Amino acid sequence: MKRPGPLLTLLAGLVFAVFLLVLNATTGTKNASNPYRQASPGVSVSATAPTATASPSPSPPPSPSPSRGAVTNADYAGRTDDGSSAVAVSLRGGRAIAYFCDGHDKESWLKGDVEADGTMKLTGGNGDELNGTLEDDKLIRGTADVGGQRYAFTADRAVKPSGLYRATATVRGAKIDGGWIVLPGGKQVGVVERDGTPSAAPEIDPETGAVTIDGQKIVARPVTP
Amino acid sequence: MTVDPNAATQGFPTPPPGHGRPGATRYLVPALVAAAVAVGLGVYGKVHDPTGTAFNLAGFSSTGAVKSWLATTAFFFALVQLVSALMLYGKLPGPAWAAALHRWSGRIAFLVAVPVAVHCLYALGYQTYSTRVMWHSLLGCFFFGAFSAKMLLLRSERLPGWLLPVIGGLVFAVLTAVWLTSAFWFFRTFGVTT
Image (cartoon, each protein chain N blue to C red):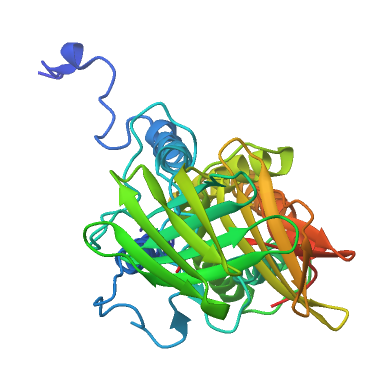
């Protein structure tokens, strides 16, 4: 007589895997009105939406996931027109988070909603503001008002590993908050704040996000709204 | 008449259906399923567009930490597997419930490993950008193939005595390598954190 146990074990694993995939897929398409966002207790849905795309494939960029938002989920990264600073914007389910950073001592995180026509007005601390327009899901053009100065910028669609990364940690009692923009081409612009004091950030490993700050290894993660 | 008229035409007795070549399907099916699982996972990981992120469990700082602890749990139960298997084969003194221990620790180890693999394949994909990552991707896919083969072989009877220990040992060794190239690396790189 054949034993059913091992087969049941395999099937249980398969069913479990499919269940998790479905959970991932449904939470991955969340938008503001998605009821799945806090679906199950104990499982906090954090940063579910896909970052742009991964391996550089010759095929046309696959849409990251069927998004119910008005704009496609994607990341954008580029420079200000004067070349002094970098800007990255991450769009997920109709919301956006942006990071402005000059690589030395000026930085700003900005958040807001993306309208159906692709315009966005993001706000940050100290009255910082970013106005941008998404054009053909290819680039975002606009202005950023940071620290009382206005910068025009253009950010192109970013493909992993380029994009927006952030790491927070406590190293020897100091609160570390680092932000990195990995530009298309691999160049990085980053600022790390130690207890609120900004300075140039060491480079992260764009594949893993690993970075050593003050002798401590921490990991920067892709940022999503 | 003492001669059976059918005797001459009978030739070699036809083997009963279903037992034609007992070895063939018995090994072929698990081997094919194992290959299909391993290659299927690898192809999915390669073709599917990695999402970078997936849901996280509350109470952990990162999905990396969650996965590392789940993988470590699986590895712990894999060690239980090794010990209980030695008991079953009489290499170690063991209780009467060693068989149940072996079955259930194996099930737990497998089911705990599933969400880790789902996250790996869904969020990260099959990657080859460093030696560690390449081996982890390759062996991770191989593990689930080998495990499937082991499960299917268990359903056969009268296997050569060495086969299950070899396959089981292979599954254990591969899981160890997968754990070393992921959770162990994670804990060494980022510290033993939750």
